[in-house]
Length: 138
Image (cartoon, rainbow, N blue to C red; front, side):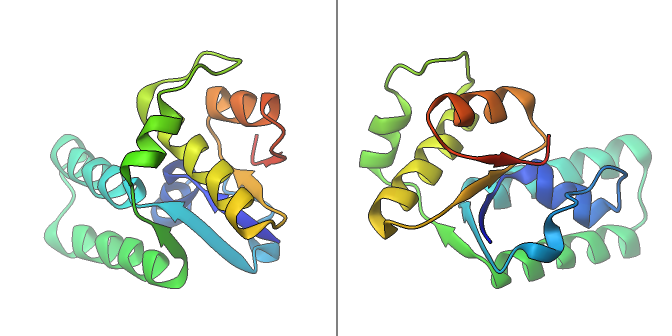
């Protein structure tokens, strides 16, 4: 399976949280927006401050994020991608999730390939399904 991975999927893996993507073993190729690095690292920093993670734990989690990013295709954010994300959508969606959806849809069109969107975010999942992308993780 080729899966577009949003940060909710990567963070549950990195943090060892319950409810991680059950389809993870079937993901042969991962694709993600360059946004995921910022989202994941900002989340880890917020957890570090709120839960007082020690330096070793922070280093381990950040290293896990970088390893995951090295193992997947990271799509850069371009002006055409941002223009696509700015277009009206069939469901309510925030800015960052619109960029994720635009990235996944554009990747699928350019590659003319099968792609599922992996997310634990209900709003992003609903928008993806409403635009014809299959969704796993909800």
